[in-house]
Length: 302
Image (cartoon, rainbow, N blue to C red; front, side):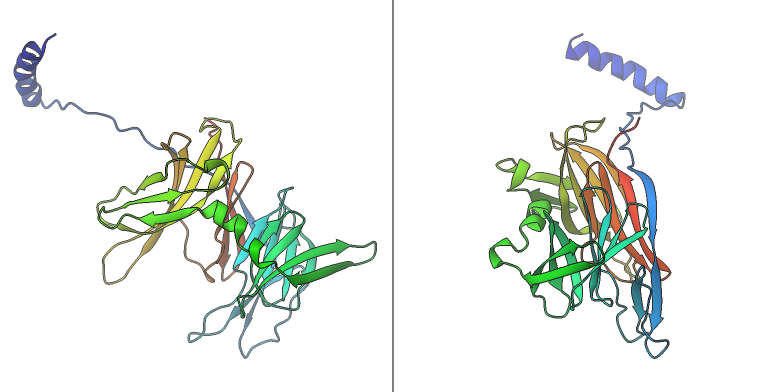
C-alpha cells in the first residue's frame, strides 16, 4: 500500500473509530522489577547517650542513638565474601564483624580503630578509618584456639582501586533533565561507549547518579553482562522527599529491570550502600530497630 492509499484509509477509518469510542493504543513494554529474595537480620544492640553503658555481645553490632542534636552512629560499610557471607564495619565496636549468609555471627577482626568502610581485596580487607579518613589493610589469621587480626597502613597506590572499577565515572547532563552517563573505563567495560541513563518522571528530577557495578556471567534472561546503577530523585516541594531507583542495563545499553522505590529511610546513612556478588544485589539497610541486608536477584526467572 502506497502512502496516498494509506492516508486515505486513515481518513476514512479514524473518524468512525473515534466516534464509536475506539482508541488506537500502543502498549509500552513494562520493565520487570527485580525480585526481593531475602532480608537478612543481623544481631544488633541499640544504646543511647547518657543511658546504659555501650556494651554488646560479640555477635551484636552497635547502634548509638545520640539524641536529637547529634548524628546516630553505627555500621556504614559492608562487603560480601566469596561464599556469600558478610563482613560489616562496626565502628563503635572498633572491629570487622563476620556473619554467614543467614546473618549468624562467625568471628571478629579487632582493629583498634573505628572503621567506616570495608572492601574485600583477595584475602585482605581495605578499611577506611571513620574519624581520620586514613586507609588500612587488615587480615584475619585464624588459629586453633583464637584468631589474630593484623592491621597495617594500606599502600597508597592500591587504595580505592576496586571501588573505582565498580562505580565508574558518573555524570549528570545538566542541560538535559533526568539524563546522565556512566563511563566504566576499567575492567570488562574498558574502551566501550558510556552508558546513557534516563529517569522517567514528570514530577521528580534526578539529583544523583551512581554506578553500582558491571556484572558478568549471570547468563539467565537479562543477558551475560549487566550494568547496575542507582538513581536519586527529588521533587521541588517544601518538604523534599528523596526516592531511589535501581536500574539494570544489558550489554546493548537496554534497560531490562529495575527496583522502582528502594528504601532510604536509614537510621544511619551507609557510606557503602550496595554490593553485587554473583547474581545478587545487596543493600546495607541500618534501621533503628536493627541492621538489615536486603537482597535482590539479578536473574530473570520468568
